[in-house]
Image 1 (tube, one colour):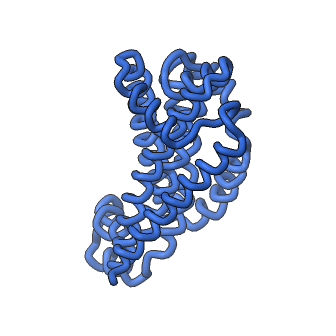
Image 2: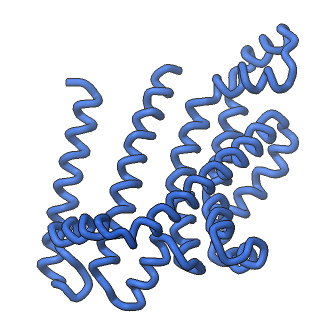
Amino acid sequence: MTNDTVSWRGTLWLTAAFLLIWQLTYMTIGDLALRSPVQTFTFAFELLRKPSFWPHLIETGKAFAAALAVAVLLGLAIGISLGLKKLAGDVFEPMLVALYSIPKVTLYPILLLTFGLGISAKIAFGALHGFIPISLFAINAVRNVRPIFLKTGRVLKLGRMAMVSRIVIPAALPEIFSGLRIGFSLTMIGTVLGEMFASQKGLGYLLMNAIGLHNVDIIMAITLMLIIFAAGMSSILLMIDRHLHRRV
């Protein structure tokens, strides 16, 4: 039996256990604050068939894609730069950790004043959640590159950009990708939270409206969509992550 088979079986068992617990919880609580799995899946499909729902889904998708791109580019640029320079890394790494420990919600008013009420603020809030973990993983990944690789680059008289692209990134890729996997999830959380606080469109906006109106059907359906998307993408990224680490 291969590891992939064991992994898929474990995923199926975990999914079955989750649905069973969900159904039992619904039977205990009732319709006041919950819907059954069947009811939630049914309403989610109905929601996806409504033309008025798709602009919100597309808005969240655009904001998330842009925020992830910013988080990845900024995180890798900072992480690789600080990883290559020991003194700068020792100085700025604790600052990144301290910044990451600050509740991001407290920074949202500043982002609103800076970027205004719209998609730019959501992108900034999502990227703020994701770029620091990516930076921290990249710093440690570059620091752990074998010295012999760097010495080989110097012997070949590679320039800084060539050294980074041809030696540092390929050698550090498994650990860098682990940071990207975590940054992916956190960026999605930040983007949805940004839509919940100040937005006129998006899944987060629909969630806040549904909470205000106590519309349990919409709350459960959108939450289910986000969970399925996050779990599916995380599983794919985890498989790639494991494959990269096996190659090392």
